[in-house]
Each structure stands twice: as structure tokens, then as C-alpha cells.
Image (cartoon, rainbow, N blue to C red; front, side):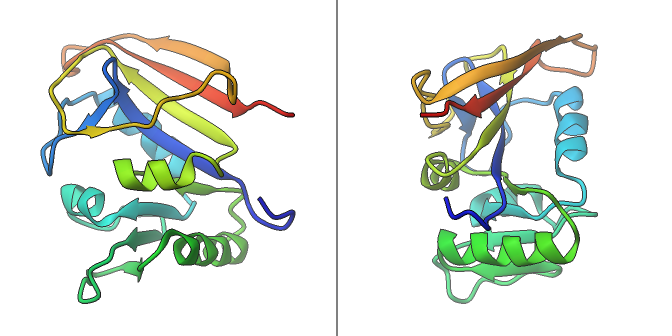
Amino acid sequence: MKQDSLPLVIVAAVARNGAIGDGKRLLWHVRGDLRHFRALTLGKPLIMGRRTFESIGRALPGRRTIVVTRDADFHAPDIAVDHDIEAAIARAGDFARRENAEEIIVAGGGEIYAQTIARASRLCITEIDLAPAGDVRFPPIDPALWQEVRREPQPRTPRDDADFCFVDYARRLG
């Protein structure tokens, strides 16, 4: 990572079996995770893949959304489109500097996480206590590279599909 680049922070909800998605269908509804995601990402540029964007269906308020896609014809209101992760990171850095954001958020999906985990400085993972048969997986979190720095179990409400826990990881130095 270059000295002048802003930290990349990966934010994801991950099931026990590593599943994060299944096509365009959400695998669970955990209201506390949605609130946590909003708190972590508000005012920061978000990088996400086209399928993740399409599953959300719109640009999220209060965040600059950059969609990475190979589809040269893709466009949607209120988003920026890039065709590779390097261009998306550069654009997110420009947005972040203009808007005084301290970091860039990577918000999915599986391909985008796989392309950025080696560059990320922090992982903000919501562990979902389910094991659904999703077809999109989060990359393995290698304990030789990542140190758990915070674990905060959350109270399940009647509106949540599962128990869940917020877990933060920092990249190990050296």
C-alpha cells in the first residue's frame, strides 16, 4: 500500500460457513447488522461489485458509491462506475480526500473482497450464526495475517433471523 493512500476497510456480514450471498437473494435479515453497516459507512466512499449494487437496488444515501463491473454499458443513477478495482480505489480516494473521509469502504461482493483483502488494513465482520447454502463466499481470514481486536456479541431481537456478533480484525504488522 502506498504511503499516501487511504486505508481500505472491508465490511461484510459472513455466515459460519463463509457464505455471504446467493445470486441476488439475501440469505438473512439481521436488522442490527444493517444499522452497524450504516454507522461504519456513512460519509465514506463505498466500493462494491455490480451484483452487490443490484441486490441493494440503489445508491445508499450519505455515501459515494463506486460500482466495479466489466459491463461497459452499465450505469445507474447517483453512482460512479469503474471497470477495474485499481480505478475504483483511485476514484474512492479522490472522493474521500474531497469529503474528508479517513478511509475507503469495500462493501462486497465475493470477487471484490477477494481482490482487496490483501490490501485492506482492517476487516469489520458481522458473524452471522447461520450456515446457509449460499454460492458466494467471503475469502478465508488468515490468522497469520489478521489479528482479532474486538468481538462484541449482539442481542438478537425478534426481527433478526439469527444471533450475530461484530468482530474487527487488524492486519498483523511484520
